[in-house]
Image (cartoon, rainbow, N blue to C red; front, side, top):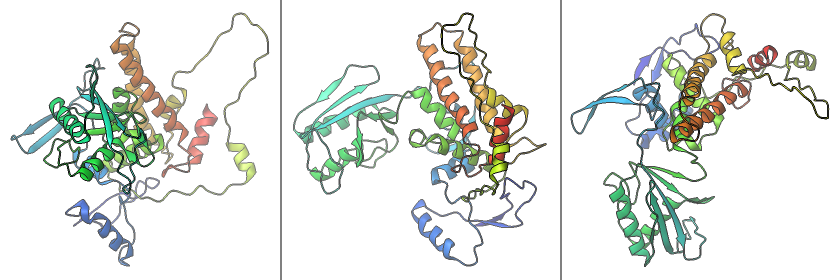
Amino acid sequence: MEWQNRLTDIFHRGGHVGRQLCVCSESIYYYKALLKKLEKDPRVARLFNTDLLYIQQYLFTRLKIEPASKVKVEHDGTVLQTITKIDEHEGGVQPPPFTILYFEVTTLSSLYSLDSHDVNDPIKQITVRYQEEQEVTFADDEETILEDFCNYVLTKDPDILISAEQNCLGTSVEYLIARMEELGIDIKLGRTDRRNAIEGRVYLDNDSFDNIVGLIEKARFGCLTLSLAPHYSISRLIDSRNCYELIQQGFVISHAHKPERIRTIEEIFACDKGGMIFSARVGLHENVAVLDYENEYANLILKHNLSYERCSNAEGLLPTVLESVLKRRIMFKDLQKSFQVNTREWHWCEQRIVALKDILVALYGTTGSFWNRLANVDAFEEINRLS
């Protein structure tokens, strides 16, 4: 434990907390129990950073580098000593050399259940494909299938495992592990010595995985691991990035939302100006033109320094977050023009552009959202008014 001075309210940037006690648990095993005790302790006036995952705590406060970034590391062979982020070359559209193994599990009934009380549907076969290699199918007795699959995974040593299916009860990996335990098989799947686990690899399913560069853009933006990023909604990704930026600026994070102020219907009508749509005249027309503003909302936010806290002098949080995304998207749009259409590099650019566009649109759209812990309806309405 140690006493620290930290900012607590983004809407009152000038006020520091006099003294704030930072408590660190020896292990995440004790974290929830410690949190419950602190919540009931009458000496504790307020808690901060408690709704951040321990992975976020580590990434935000210790590593301070977005996952999937290019880095330089120093180590002594077993212990990491230093890690430094490297500015990536603007021409680099190729994703990090992550290797991917796809697999599909088929059970005897063709309907597998992940209910802990019903793991008695034997595995009939497992079909796998590593990178762009030819598909391989393991079909034998169940124990042999599981052993062959695990040996294949260990031999190929993929960074990412992607299954073809997932149901409401769990994942393919969970079912594989459940069957191993049911059969008393002790097999290593991950990169650590722990058995019946996939530690050291990222596991995803087809529903949460679209393409590797899109996943990387989401992970980098949200400062989240490749395992977490695809399962976060766009609102949660933005919240994660906001929290990361605030912590870098010396803030602590409160889980409380800022309530929207009460207004009359007349005030809402006067301020809430949405987009105006002019209906086209029905029929055939000649000389039709389209006028489109490039990144209109993003540029309005930057030009007028519009943010949750409505800063007038210092750069606001929203422009800070948005500008890095906008610059990155423009970089890939310019870079895409140097590649022939439909080449691999062109598609990498396109996938990154689409992922970053989704983030930019949501950064504007969630400005006044109730689900945004920093939401400010006034800022949202001002963006619309200027537009």
